[in-house]
Every structure is written in C-alpha cells, then in structure tokens.
Image (cartoon, rainbow, N blue to C red; front, side):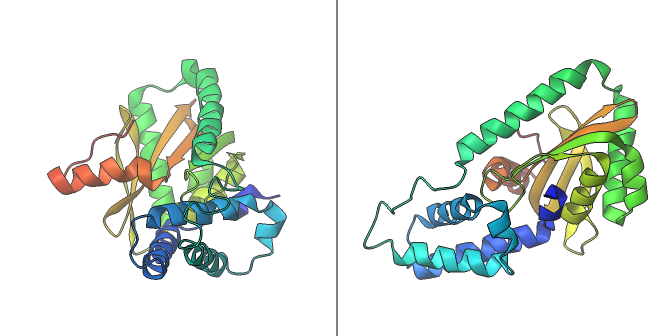
Length: 245
C-alpha cells in the first residue's frame, strides 16, 4: 500500500477537525466531553483496515456520521461502549512512533551536518515545499529518507512512517504544498533550525529535520494539536514562539 497516498493537505486536516468539533458540540448540546467524542471518532477511523479506509469515498462525511453516532449514544451510555477505542490509542501510537524515530536518530547522529549546512538544507526544504517544487525537494532529501507524521490519533494522518525520498517528497508536498492559508517559517525547533507551519495564523505543525551529508535523512512532523497547544498559547501571550519538547 502506498503510504504517501494517505497524506492530506494541512489546511484540510484543520478544517476537518474544526468541522467535527462543531458537529460534536452541536449534537452533544455543548457538553464538556466534545474532545473525547473527536478522539473516539478518530479511534474508530484508525480501527478500520487500510483497505476499508481506501473504500471510503468521503472520509469527512464518514467521520461526521461517526461523531454523530457517538453523540447520540452519550445520554444512554455515559461511559460509551468502545470508549477505549478499537483503533490505536494515542499513547501507544506516540510511543511506537517515538521509538522508531529514536532508533533512526541514534543511528544517524554521529553523521549530522554542522549547523550552517543544516540550516541551509532546512531552508531549502521549506522553500521547495512552499513553491511546490518537487525536483528541488527531492534533491534535498536522501534517497532513503524517512518521515514520521505524529498526529497522535487526533488528526487524519498516516499511522506508518514513510520511507524513501520519492515517497517522502510526495507526502511533504501534499501536506505542505502551496496554499493561500498556509505559511512555512524556518525557526528554532528543539535547539536546531526546523520548520513551523501555520494555517490561518495557527501553528498547525512543527517539523524537525536531521541532515546528513547535506541531505535530509529524517523528518519528524508533529501535527498533534495537544502537543502544539503551548506553541499557540505562547504565541498569543507573547507574540513569540519557543520550542515544544
């Protein structure tokens, strides 16, 4: 299965989540567990097999209907049958992705490029994504590059890591390609230059990149809204961003 084909533009991911929150808020009568409804909705989405998800013509419509079903079950079953979710729990999902990334990072760390070279490559990746330039992006990636998209089970991202320069190029261009509501900025992420992606002035993704031999070997994209909350809170409070650990 082509994992890169699971990629979704970041503006679409945010719009989808906002829509589901609106559906849950309206159908639950403004109950405080709206976020739990959305978490369960995505758990059920990830509980489907890849083939089942591929047969769904409109994921947004399926997710909306599922959120509605969950809301209709709230009064009769406060604990919600399946509340643990048949899909991938966020904590287990995060742990699995973190373990994969750490193994890859430890294997590459000794060969990392020095800061000026690292910064130049990261900026080139950001420029290529912003321009939708597949050739330039591909040339900045190692042929065996790997990308991990950490949605935490809270937005519709691929569950598996993406391997290979061509696959990573396609995934990044789909997620971060030119869009009137999306901007990419090169700035400090975990003490090294990374990319911060904003959609409608909201931080929608924070991306760390490992550069080896003047090419990107590893991409770690955090899209989990829970992990991005402090980025957005600090931006509103101070007008500046500080790295999320």
